[in-house]
Image (cartoon, rainbow, N blue to C red; front, top):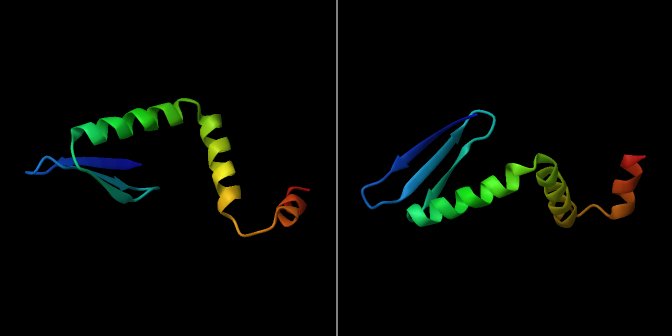
Amino acid sequence: MHFELYLTDDNQIHLVLQGEACGAIVFRDTGAFAAFMEEVHALFHDYKQFIEAYQELLMMETPIPEPFLDAFDD
C-alpha cells in the first residue's frame, strides 16, 4: 500500500491511499490528524484485536440471520 500526505493552504491535511486500499481522508487540522493517527496506532497495535473488532462490526451490519452464518462456519 502506498499513501501520500498533503497539507493545503488552509492547513487541512489530505491523506490519499493507493494500492490495495484506495481512497482519501481530509482532516480539518493537525489536531484531528494526530487524534486519528493515535486511534489507528491503538487499533492496529494488536492485529488480532483489529480482526476481532472488524468481525464483530461485520456481524452487526449484516442482514443475514445468525443461523445461516453459523451454517457456513460448519
